[in-house]
Image (cartoon, rainbow, N blue to C red; front, side):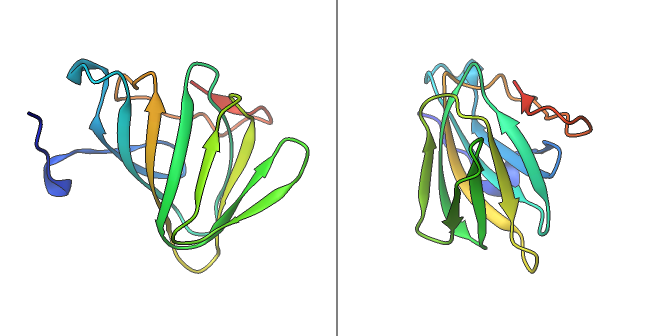
Amino acid sequence: MIVRRFDDVAAVDWGNGLSRRFLVESDGMGYSLTDTTVRAGTKSPLEYRRHLEACYCISGTGEVIDSAGTSHAIEPGTLYALDQHDAHFLVAGPDEDLRLVCVFSPALHGGERHSLDSSEFSQY
């Protein structure tokens, strides 16, 4: 059995926020579970070529925008799933951080970070 508490999981600065990776590849579960904060007012161009990801919003507001430009509002109680390795923009609202619980399959190694300095979608 694996038991971890929020304060015991180190936060990884992933680029535009912090991610606490509660389950990673070395745990042997086959997927990762994260508690991810997206800093207020940020826009992150993201793409996961190795992973499928599902995110469930627990606080804050924002939007996820697909590569065709279609925007989907995010607020507490909203789930979005990137079931096609979708390139997307993750946008946190201007007034407060966006907080998501995310599942990645296959599992993350644990230290992954995004490179958000280029015009390309950041990937890992």
